[in-house]
Image (cartoon, rainbow, N blue to C red; front, top):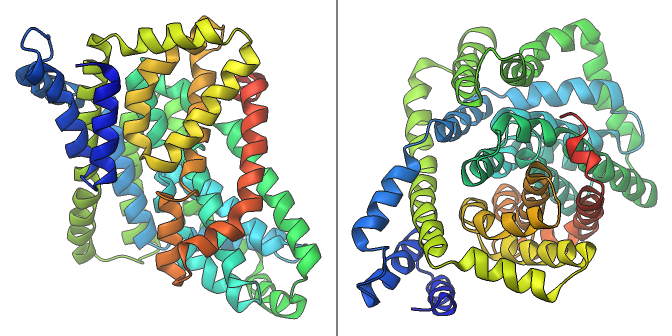
Length: 429
């Protein structure tokens, strides 16, 4: 069975709404079923699935998912938002900018874009609407800024890329810092332009900020100290060598439990079971997709698909800039129709040989790939962030997408800068 037929069958499965994990399993088994001499038999596929998820770095994923859920239940995002609103709330676009910075910080806790949108959006969108901001604009800001959750470390997609490429997860985390800050800065520039053009209700904003100022800096800082300390502890443990990313993820779970139960007292012991159940429900489908993706990528390797695609691209495109633009366009399209985890696990073995052949650093490519797929979080038809944001505000997905277009353009400008200026990603390494 040819690779073209395998990919065609895979896309047919997606079109007829077969779950992606099952679709990946089907197309992984088919080449061996139709050709008994092919190495990838059914037994090989099952072994690949089980062997692929038997991974210590992979344990970080459910831990960061669980930590993010505990933080959301404990109202941590509100504490973070209050600090930034205290300092920049009265400036032009101060409150939308505070939301963007809160997404940056919350992304450093959860490692997940949809989790960031849900936790930050459920708290900040009602505040922005109450202060007179357009509801669609407020929702779009959170949906797009939530994409920073997979770029700012710790990041679940970076863990997946590290698994697929063999690169250091710690280095990938470090490489995501400056690109995340760059994207956040560009989003804030647009927010300032939008608010200058459409105006703000300064009286309502001043009343809101004055309530925070009435507590005084010490009061606000005391309330949010442990929330802000969370990413510092997680990343500090990793980069001082105290803990690996997986161990840091476990530390983040216990830290978020202690803070929510005993310091903020925003959670009770009886809530823990419900959070654990929700965590399993969230992670189990990811695990199934992960196992099937690994099996499919190994079948493609046996079919020599990465080598064939690499030879075709390098044979037809000779300019490094053109090759990178083609890869970016391809990843943007993939991000629109496929979830991040299978996209990374399937495409990394195919694209990595191409970019290394033209002299691109694998860490730099990992950042470029994740930024591309982060844009997919806010582009239809999949656009997970759009659906999460829509569920919070009951605004149609396409209306949010329309309002988010200028913000997506900011993301694309950042993507071009990240692609062609390697130092942005590699500055801290």
